[in-house]
Length: 271
Image 1 (cartoon, one colour):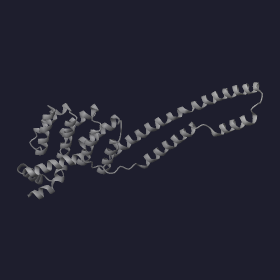
Image 2: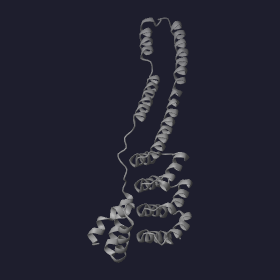
Image 3: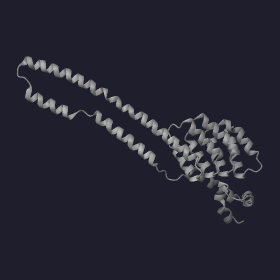
Image 4: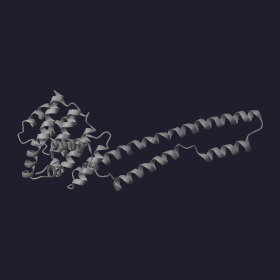
């Protein structure tokens, strides 16, 4: 094959969607052509950093829960407003019925003071209603987690990509969602979904279960693109537990030359 034909095959080669004969031809060409090898490495690096996720759109269930929470928030704001009718009555009443005798003025002033203190206490007792928003937010987060896990289990690759995208938006994902993301990285049949899972797990790289899952999944990858992305992530977070996995990967005789080179570079940086 010419260099031009080889470069046309790069996208299929990177995602592993290529027959074995063509793959061997490309690998043979890369071994002899430094220009194509450098271009493929550059392409894989760029592709690793690019997202392949579709535009996220909220479902009708999420929309319904959002408006429920918004209505509850509006009700709390209304409860916190001082009652205008009470203020009007007090203003008009004081003007019309305020006594002229000093003794009666003092007595009425004390009565109004007591009423004011009582009213203030009653108004403050309604303020804890704002705490009702916290369970709503928690329920919203739980529902988003359930939706993400459901999408990750969908037969459609595009729906699974949406599930990965939704998972990456969680600020504090629970252990179930993290386990599902790691399982997706290790076992999903679509390389694009696995690559998206790498990007999502990068956001939670400080969690011990995520770091351990990344190291474990390296041995299960077959797509060169996913392998390179995973190696880059492991090296960037300095995960020492992945050293043995990198050594085992390098020993694989069928390993793509580009992946082997990246693994050797990563191993040097971790040692």
